[in-house]
Amino acid sequence: GLGSLEQTVLPALSTTLPTGKHSTGWRDVWQEMAPGSERSLAQLPWYQDYELPVPTGLDTGVVEKVTEQLQAFWDHLGVQLLKLQAVALFPQQFNEESEQLGGKGALLTHHTLALVRRQLETLEDEAVLIQCDKHGGRNHYASALQHTFPEHLLEVCKEGRAESVYRWGAPPSRTEIRFTAKGDAFVPAALASMAAKYLRELAMEAFNTYWCERLPGLKPTAGYPADARRFKREITQLQAAES
Image: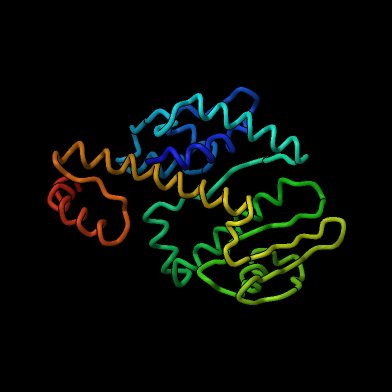
């Protein structure tokens, strides 16, 4: 279920919101974590009228308790989580851009770095460290970084299986980005991974609800390749009737 994700993602999200504010619904989470996704949610029928209270897999009191513990931990360390955001790519955009960019690996890098740039633009002139997981085991990111930040001369510090590191900008606003193998050992990359996973699972909840309500006896799908093909076969006739 979603409870294990919600026990981390929702408290982390809550620490970025005004004191006492919590996400209470499916649409709240999308608006807070994936701003700009409203248009796609309005266009696809399984999302248009969907709503679901959150958390779905554990008691609200657990979220509140963990939020308090997490905020106390941040305070103890002297750090602050400013935002927890992701980019949601819906089917048409994903398919079109995968073809344009030459594959889903390039698509991942393109949107990750675009998100990084948007976040950097919200900061004052200061030193920044960006921690990423490796993208499909790739070691080389210089060309993608130079394309995203053309106004800077990129410094390649190292590129290898364990880690690839790059820097740009002049002090005091020097920026460093690291693509590290098993990078989700670092809190920022781990939270990013869980936030994206949570949005995906919320999207699948809506998708499954839509088709299962229209086809009694249909078994929901997790959306991964083998079972997705089974699901597609079973809804084919209904899908043709609705198109």
